[in-house]
Image (cartoon, rainbow, N blue to C red):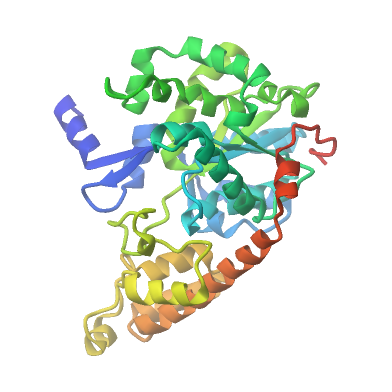
Length: 398
């Protein structure tokens, strides 16, 4: 590919931690895998997870929501040998309420923690959002605690989970690792990876090591002191890949394993894959604070349909499942594989109408959100303090 063609392709599709867009409307994940240099998550790895854990693979695994990886096979090798690993994921707390797309990595990480019985660190990058979203330090910290309540409501095991905010935790061994990483990454390298410009303040340029070093167990001496350098597995959306490409390049140079990644596709906006979920447009997404009535209204009014213009035409041609958002949402959240296939078959053949599919989706999402709301209501400030307390977790690998 010559330089001109490469530049055109980059303009057509932008995927980084701060922007996801495509002039073609939808993201070409095959191109993204080629560009980033990660690998497709194939069925053999999914079957291997089932064999090693003795439990069915999560719906996000078996339906390809988590579709790409870096060295996930090596994590499974290590687990099979009896070697230890831990999980690391995070959240940039920029809004009061999470939408369903924000829940996906936490729902999947909860499954991984339960299936492999491993410890987990969750980073709240309140410093990053303070710098990128023009929030005050105090507001960023407040949002971090609010978001922590939603994360805890996903059901993580407090005996195996440490949640930390950067403003509270960065220092000591963590900061030493940040300095080690910073010395290995040139300004040109960080500009090449993240696309920073001369207009970006130096806080942005200096942030990547903060997200890199939770990949290294020595950043958490209260958890991993005395442990034999356990591996790290990071479940995340694929837009976070640039941080960890940088981390993986540096890790062997400072004496650590490269972190492994398991990466998800993006959850589409209600208006379709061309749309973008945005906090400025509450109708672009289903939020975990939405009532059943609001969810029903959003789905009926805004969820982009692949149904035809008239019932007659729909009966004749069937729905276009490629663009239908209710079917895509059901693919994420309807547990029953047989029911999902039945809906796709009947709707695609025109035997089922858009209204019926939207009705089923409304029930699925309302139940999911109401379960989450009940769990979150039970999360107290004392529970947040307990999850965020710097403490040892003596049974974290049991």
